Amino acid sequence: MKRLSRQQREAIGEAARKRVARRGHSELKTSRATPALQLLTRSMRGRVPDLVALKYQRMKESPFGYFRGAAPVMAADLAALPNTGLIAQLCGDAHVRNLGAYAAPDGRLVFDINDFDETIPGPFEWELKRMAASLVLAGHEAGHRNGGAQAAAYAFVSSYVKLMHELAEMPLMDASRWQVHRIGDVTPVHAALFKAERATPRHTLGQLTVGGGGKKEAARKFRAQKPVLWRVGGKEARAVLASLAGYFLRLQPQRQHLLSMYKPVDVAFKVVGTGSVGLRDYCIYFEGNSPNASGEADPLFLQVKEEPASCYAPYLKKPRVPRHNGQRVAEGQRAMQVQTDPFLGWTELEGRDYLVRQLNDHKGSIEMTDLEGAGLNAYAELCGELLARGHARSSDPLVLKGYLGEGHGFAEAITEFALAYAERTEKDWEELKTAQRAR
Image (cartoon, rainbow, N blue to C red):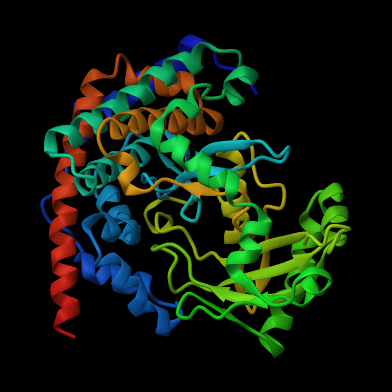
């Protein structure tokens, strides 16, 4: 296949401006083909009925809480607008709390996008619009007025544009593994890294399990913390453990060997996040060399998480994704992250697709209080850099650079969209609360 020149690749991006002018991204349609509450109801199909009320409860807590659980609503809103046709791997649910710290395969702590349930190849600007709107909503929740939230959204897009230009000029290998070297200096990230440093498997053991100590450590079991955590046994637990057979065969040989050294001890159902509430999510507690000479445990926790189709899938023409949604999530994550969970994989259970990954292995996320004051702007700039790197790894930075140009008009338009969408979200949130009160 003939390789296009740098000039030809940039020209592809420039030509996309005829489909959507850069300043045209401020547009937001005033009406919807399907009401937001109806879209939310549709997205609940197939979920555990008893947990649907809990999801709505979490969404009612704040406009940002609503936004976290309403990715299907925004997917429909974005799909109703003209798009550039410039495709990158989207994490799919870009918002300020879907970035976080975790342990790389070599044990170092890294900070990156870390939620890929909705990941799919799609128009790159959809990702920016969702993240920018989240910055406005999170800014409001952290006490910023509209001016401060607007400045953060603009800083985010400007940072994205700036780094995309830099990545487009780098050797391809350098661009694919580019790192944010100042990451620990960003105050909200510093707080997340501090939490992640303490979130060891042994720390998780103390939080999620109860039971014997010392040489009886293997007798520990998951603690009961309904409605967010409870043990499962019998046929259900056996089915979860049996599902690991297919997952095991898909791991690299060295990961297979390591996992084979651990013995499964207990299984639990765990409720996580906001958007994922109601989906089936299991945790498996394993023990390795435990207890050691000092009486310390050697725990490993795997999460087996149900993955339905991406909420963007209905709006994209034949998206190039695997039929297995656990595989879709794992491969999307690997496409965007430089360092990925070594136990990332997928399996099937009772006709449903599942992602498998480590649970809480040195993971830490930001809190809203971390975004007070100057923290919001600094974090916004970092979000722009991490999304730019993820898109550059999965798309062509030269094409995106060609479309973005200097980026001032593009940044202004995305910021205007973010402000308008935050206002719409606040109205949708009020509608949800009214509808829930009427039940």
